[in-house]
Image (cartoon, rainbow, N blue to C red; front, side, top):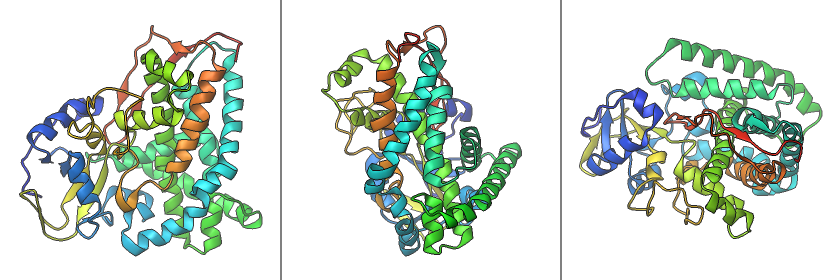
Length: 392
């Protein structure tokens, strides 16, 4: 392990709310070895920005890592030319042009249908009844897995993100992850002949058309599901909650003074849906007085970087007027999220404006508590809300 100061944490409390401990680490031990996670955490924004780009030292290629072992060797766990080759293959499915010309309209159709079904009810859990199905239906379009339900998409995604964050080695969590990846493999096998006969813009179709090896196709579809479901799902629900909890800021959006995209970007900074990215030390290295040895595991704590007081004034506040240019909510460097444009379209162009337009008088149901969970992946555990029934 690295020579970083050893800092013990309460894992249950860290899952419930990581931000107090992350603030303490930034102040007292910005590079710290946490034995409960078996990893060295980098918590300051500028340190992460420097190290993220040094792929020859802080390597994403982790043959023994949880993601590679449980989901296959996808492009997120490759560096340099190998990473860029696969990133180039998927670009036609995820580019800003494709998002604008194809996916945004498809996303809007799903949002309109889901919101039409919700409008008459007058109340719902918007995590369960809006964010989850919308994210799942949109991801079915993006991946090309039209043969599954949005419920399956969400369950498989959750099982995989639980699996790849299972640093305590819970066998039941690993079993659920294995079951999910086996189900995804079966769904891919069913759709391969369909998209080969009828090519489309989906990830599955463009990867098969490129001649990519089937194992890599499987691994990259799983990668898209693992992050592509939970991140927009949690961002949709979370941003709605944040705006309802901060009515003056919501008013800025309703009046057209701040774009919906800015609200999404600020929420993703403030409550980072993807709060951590792991790396493997590839060769001996010394940084900021800390010695790293080959095979050390390092966590880039994006959620901490996005609350770094030296970068963001009043970093613990939700402020839609904030300049979020230095946010690392979508990662940084060569592994910047390839699905960022699709996520922005789904959340900021479709979900947020549609929900506030169609659900008249949308407000929080204050009779029920709001709870968050997670640190590697973080989101609302429910969003009870109410509105004027039948007016959507």
